[in-house]
Amino acid sequence: MEEHEVYAVVGNEGFERLVAAFYRQVPADDLLGPMYPADDLPSAEQRLRDFLIYRFGVPPTYIEQRGHPRLRQRHAPFPIGQRARDRWLNLMNSALDQAMLPEEVRQLLRAFFASTANFLMNRSGEGTT
Ligand code: HEM
Image (cartoon, rainbow, N blue to C red):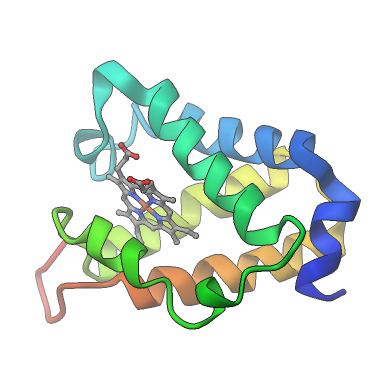
């Protein structure tokens, strides 16, 4: 499966299920919960959903494939070290399972989220979040 085929398979609906399953886990998470706006999670959910639909929707956007510059800037306020990266991916991978997307789509999105999360890390070293 190629990136440009994902949207045709899962549609808005698949991304909605995925992001809803992700944000359901956020409030109870001791590490990530406090980073997200507790009183405005529905807006945060909408931002991630819109981004994914934009990123995987048609027509494909070449700018995003060249490094997500604004995404990195927008994550600068949040300390993202190894633990936060791992936790975010754990939550997203379990959301991917809950959303019941086809296995090929899951594999592709797992790889996409992992590389984007690596790219968004802005802390390094032992003992960092
Ligand atoms: C690596 C660990 C990550 C952490 C700790 C993290 C944390 C956050 C937080 C706290 C927000 C603010 C919530 C809001 O009000 O929108 C946010 C926004 C966002 N995140 Fe992440 N994130 C991570 C990885 C990712 C990844 C891998 C992606 C994409 C694949 C992503 C995409 C987004 C998007 C699109 C927004 C909204 C940006 C905007 O328009 O303002 N994040 N993230």
